[in-house]
Image (cartoon, rainbow, N blue to C red; front, side):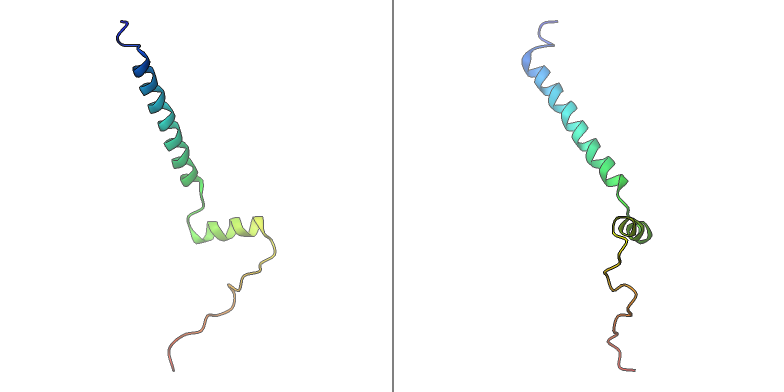
Length: 65
C-alpha cells in the first residue's frame, strides 16, 4: 500500500483535481454569460440605464437606389 500513496501520486491527484476545478469554473462562467442579442441588451440596459449607443439610428446602406 505504500507504493500507491507516494508523493508523486498525491501531487498528480492534486493537480488533476485542481485542473478539473479550474476547467469546471471556466465552463460555468461561459455558460452563465448572456449569449443572445436580447440577453446582452437586457444585461447592458440593467447595468447602464443611460443608452449612449446609436442602435436606434438606421445605418447607411451602400446601394444607390
